[in-house]
Image: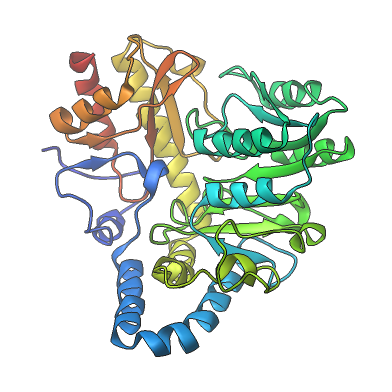
Length: 388
């Protein structure tokens, strides 16, 4: 096994990596973007919450859970720059937030829901389900993999028509690791009378977020990815004008409460990941958000360049955006089911990476985080040619 050092971080890198000791020893986990990983201290905090729940469920659910969730929601709101402390609900994941938004907006037969072809599949399914229920139509905008910010904006806005009622826009795309210019798209779409749902699954922690200035209609972003919270927890924000019409897809104890309690109070599900999410945010702040972000981007760029060299590709021609610690490399061989390739990379190379299929291309996507080292990307690069 390679010797692990990380000059991108500094002399204390081994101490930081040791905090992620739940990861499988000897395995290179280059797929933080899919499921995230929480450090030991955050997982310990979650275990403490779970121990309290199991020790006295009645006291926990009747007296402790509500205040704990309110504290966690407010911590997320403050971190994300929400204009009000009680304006963020914690839900299971970003798709749950997108689904709640789509289920609540006024949509009728003859309306269009606008997506791009980079949209995460389950969010796209949520849009199609809602459209089918009311006789609306889903319009999918093609955005080239290498489009710049101006090209992305133009492609989306050119597709808006008088029928366009709702647009679901990624902040950072999952399959293709592209950063969409939501700062320009949100106000431009709203000026055209379009309700904007921002699917920000990857954005919290990865990028600085200021919901007060962005001001979309709805916004949902995972905290269990780049904010180091345990799985699974996401922050969901709605503009004030929409909060009274929002409905939880699950009828539970928050049914007649106001937002955000309406979405937060969901029976006896295990909410310990949400209760521990402030510790994930605190962990990021202790490391230094800017230092983490700069490190992760440099390491992702290193990994993309190593893969490009192994596959005889020009790294300058591959997509990548400022602030995004994920990179994709198109593979020269298409796969009917990329999950087979993902499993082979894991079993033969001891590396976890994402292998999405997008518009006929098989992509290899690597993520970078503080527990990763350059040698792990070299291992993937050295082995990928033999596998292909």
